[in-house]
View 1 (cartoon, rainbow, N blue to C red):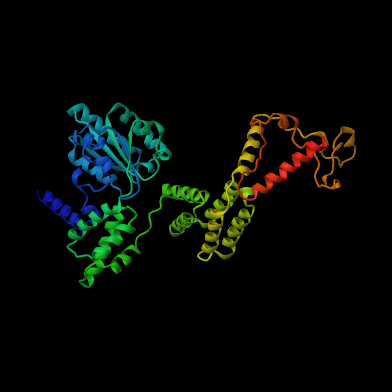
View 2 (view 1 turned 90 degrees about the horizontal axis):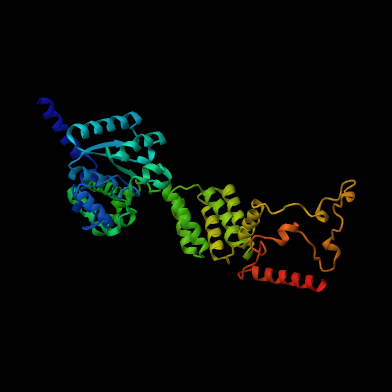
Length: 439
């Protein structure tokens, strides 16, 4: 009895000392802020939770969007037994023990078990495999929470037996509601503009917003002040910008697509996002060098020069100064005329090689400088272009099969109607004209 009293008192003490985000965790679906596509009245997920008919699910979304909150609400509403595991600390042995208990519970009492695994993407292949039979037979109902793309991080068989629910970053107005509740929970006062700034700068992460609010309240309490923007700025200065692996790939994708789409404003924004998040500047520079040829190419050959110069400047100068060189390259590449014809050219040529198009070098193009080369016909018939006053001669350079049977029935490189490629198209037309006149 005495132990129970002490345990209860300890639990209450821990609860009172818990972080603000934990103390404010909703206890019902109606208390959840945001994710209306999942928890609004009449939504499929809400109906399954309220009817206690939830099957195995994966909650996927950025930090602070409510994955654990949803699992906790399920724990409070279900009639099934609820077990929690953390993929950070649990091993295969822990997983098997949970499954054994669930099997006994089902056999003896006919009571099902829901197993919540936080950060399930951290589970190894063997740990995920250990879950599969019990999920498949219904011994356990799995709730997995992950910040990483489940299509990359969760085994296909396990993923196919679970319903995937995507959680989005909270809207600014949703975060504002949570902050207002947080101020009350902290017994504090806050300037509206301070809460507005915090809601805007939290990146849709409720946990980060409430953690920063808790710090801001602590700073204000020191001098018995109302929470101001200065307190918020100081609190946010202690918080790291969210930037997980999924964020990295998504931001890089937005960065490249913005430059390809000729939007220098967006290009600079996503560049700043990556730099502020501590992304590898050399990776950014490499992406710009690739883009210069893949998306601009001969429409503006200087694009490659600018991109390589920015990459070189980064190596010589380093950050933060090299942000200027990267920004200049972004603006140049975004405003340059676009063409992917160089990229299509090499991709098409390599496709033909893979398909078995003959790649034997025509005899007249082979090396004819060694002794007895002419006896094999090597180099015989080759015409030196510089001997012609035009600096160009009509001559076969492609292998016979490639010349007559290119898989697309067209040239590998055909200039676009953008930038310098307009002039290049004219040059090629002139060569064709000269060739036909000679024939």
